[in-house]
Length: 306
Picture (cartoon, rainbow, N blue to C red):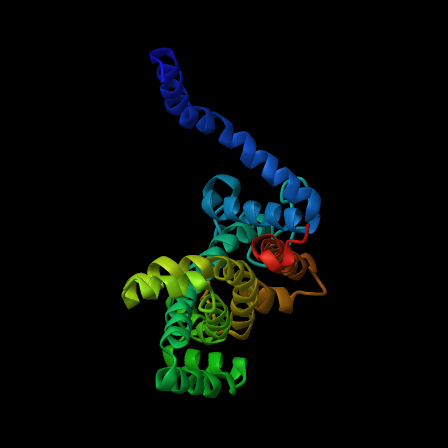
C-alpha cells in the first residue's frame, strides 16, 4: 500500500468515530420519530412519563405554593386563574399538592421497582440456571407466596410495620419480586437453550461469568419491560394503601391520601378535591402502561414484525 493510501485510511479510521459522534443525536431523534409513528399510544405514554418526572424533580419551581402551605382567604375555591385546580378545605393549592404528589409517587415507584427487580432477577436467574433441587424449592416457595391474595399480604405487612414511605416500599417490593421472578425465570430458560451459552460452557466459563456476561444481558429487555409496567402497578397500589390509611402519612401529599381524606369528605361540595388526584393517578398508570407496552413490542424480537 502506498503512503498516500495508508494516510487516507488512517484519516478515515480516526475521523469515523468523530463522524459517528456528530450523527448520533440525529439518529436517536430519527429512531424516536419512527417509534412515535409506529406506536402513537406509546409516544403519548412517554410524554406523560417525562412530564411526571419533570414535576417530581422540579416540584419547587413548578408549584406556586408549598404542599402544606395555606393560602389566606382561599378555602375551597373553585379552579380559576389564581388556583388552576382549586383549593382544599385547608386553603391549600391543589395544583401544588398534585405536583409534589408526583415526587412521592416517583420515589415510591422507583425504589420499589428497583428493589423488586434486583430480588426477582436473583431468584429467577439462579432458579433457571442451577435447576434441580434449588429450582424445585424456590418455585414452591414462590407458589406458596403467590397463593395468598395480594391485598391481604400488603395490609398484613403494613399492619406489622406501620405506615411510612420506607415500609410502603418494602411491602410492595416484597410482593412484586415474587411475581416478576416467574417472568424472568421463563426468559432465562429461553436464553439457556441458545448455542452461544453451550459454547461459553465448553470454553470453561464459570457460573458467575456465564450469568453476568451471557444470561443477564439477554434478559435485560424483559427486565426493562417489567420495570415500566411495574411502575404503573406500584403507583396504583401505593394510592390504594394511602386511600386506606396505610400509605405515606400526612401532610405529605400522596394522591391516594388526597382522595381518601378531605377529597372524600367534601366530594359533593368541592368535587375538584377528588377529581384531580384521581385524574393524576389515571394518567400516570396509563402513561407507564402504554410506554411499557410499546417497549415490549420494540425490544422483543418476536413482536417486532417487519
